Image (cartoon, rainbow, N blue to C red; front, top):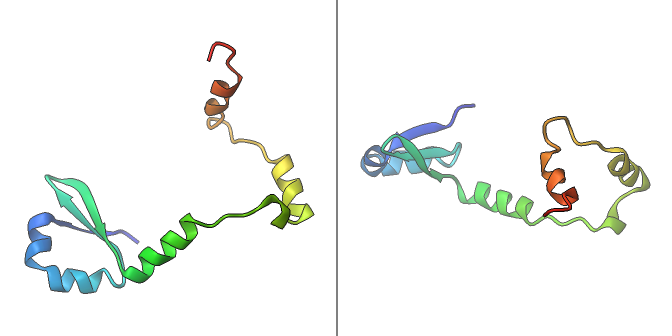
Amino acid sequence: MPTMRVSTAEFIKGYGALADKALSEPVTITKNGRDRLVLLSAEEYARLKRRDRRVVEPGDLTDAQLEALRLAEVPAGHDHPDADLHDPAA
């Protein structure tokens, strides 16, 4: 679902309606054609904050989850950050 986009001027003029719209979907506010802010409901913000702070202790994982992690491989093209860890000159 594409996010609704409005300019800062449009946002200021239509604040009430856009604030209501943001209760059901994010509204991206642009300045000079570039994304600047995203307005979203307090409920969605709280959901994102909870997800951001989710912590899993290794002892909380099942044996199957630990085995899946052990067998996991980095997809091709995404392994370049590991090179920094193994570079003796770093």
